[in-house]
Amino acid sequence: MENEVKKLLKTKIVGKNIIFFDEIDSTQIQAKNLAEKNIENGTMVLTNNQLNGLGTHGRKWYSEKSNNISFTLVLYPKCSIQKLNHLTKDIAKYVVEAIDKISKIKTDIKEPNDIMLNSKKIGGILTQIITNGENIKYLLIGIGINVNSEDFPEELEQIATSLKKETGMEFSRENIIAEFCNVFEEYCLKEKVI
Image (cartoon, rainbow, N blue to C red):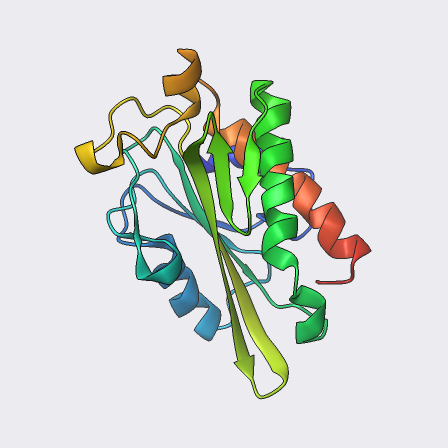
């Protein structure tokens, strides 16, 4: 999976270094551990199967093996913390843009961090800014998108869905990831975030 993503990337920083796990507890936890060790800026922790994905407010993020997108980016912003005030909303915009471009399906944002399709959740964003006083130590951006899942736990049936469940078609996870990274890096460079 990581090699396919790398072939599609046009970035210089975001996603250039990919650390891939076939299975992992949480990309966010692994990324935080790596960030504490000063891993390369823009590193992506990517997995085929996330067993204990983190959502906002301590919720769990469900993901089906080899069918969905689960990754976390590690960034070391050079900007002030105030500049990141609307970051989650901006990321959501670029996730929607990537999904729409690759799948030709219009998804929506339920602010600040849910990606919706037909009034059901298809994806989520978890941003964590780790600071040292007023300075940003690092930024973690976790993204989960239900791409090709067809089966959801009973408690999620009415509130979650996937691109495939809504359309009957399969989509390339790698294309969506690369498209997001490409447009997100443009934003980061333009806004002088990295």
